[in-house]
Length: 140
Ligand SMILES: [Zn+2]
Ligand SMILES: [Zn+2]
Ligand SMILES: [Zn+2]
Image (cartoon, rainbow, N blue to C red; front, side, top):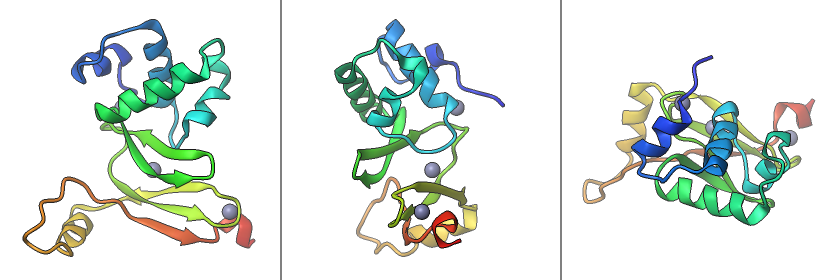
């Protein structure tokens, strides 16, 4: 599967390049679903990078639009990569196991439908849809 180049991504978002930022971004690009700073800290490929650096880097990535925020969990804010490989979609948060699942991407028509819910006086830049309930694994 195609992945964004870390160097190109950092430069495009005007983030100065460090070895640690490249490693953290490579790990984020390798993930298909959601993550938290705490879950990144546990990944083997980021061994040797301290927690404070991971939290700071994720906060910087969020501010510069490299990742987007999906919601909040018991383990902190939930993120996912924000690039062409991860088009806008809704999420499902399981109230039993706490898992966040990514749902299929919105079609252009669905996106227009969502934005049409907004009164004219508001200028939206993005929309997020989160369902909550019991996921297939917990209901089975
Ligand atoms: Zn990408
Ligand atoms: Zn569940
Ligand atoms: Zn997602």
